[in-house]
Image 1 (tube, one colour):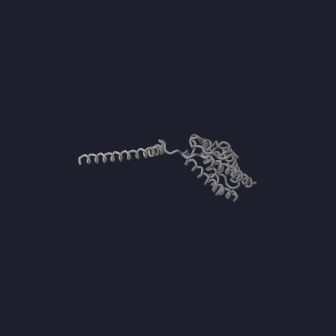
Image 2: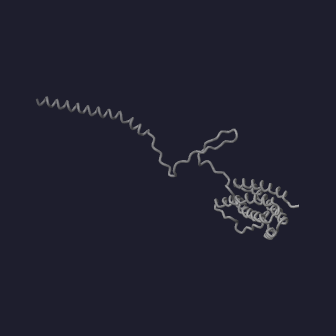
Length: 231
């Protein structure tokens, strides 16, 4: 009995050992693919310390060429400045220039003999008043002063001297009409020169449009004034 039990125990032990060996063999054959798959899986990229990369930029090609896509950091901003110092000076000068025109037109209501002069003055006042508001807004939007420090407005093209303004204020009837037409013509001619000069040196697109419109309209007004010249 004892010998049989010993043999039976030996057989059980051998079977157990064989089972363990089989299990280990199965695991050994299945682990490498898993490890290989784990090592082949992509590692998430570390976030950029400067934030996400900007999107690429589409650069237009020359006539007949297709557009190209380039990284944002390779594309330089070669656009010119939005405005320059000459743009600023033009606006700062044109505001008082327009204001003097409004002073002259205000005198026409009670002094002009020709009703056409009064109607003309009303039209100038209706046009240049809003233009002053636009020019002031252009300066304030950019944080610029309303006038250039130390600038002599009396030296601007077409600006009338204080003595000439006193003569216009004291005049009545036909004398006022004659002075008004002469002084306003000179005033408009100065504005046309200032606007034309800006078109060749300024950079701001809005001011370019304003100067073009101003030069065109003032030239038309000069022609109208010639028709109003008293005999």
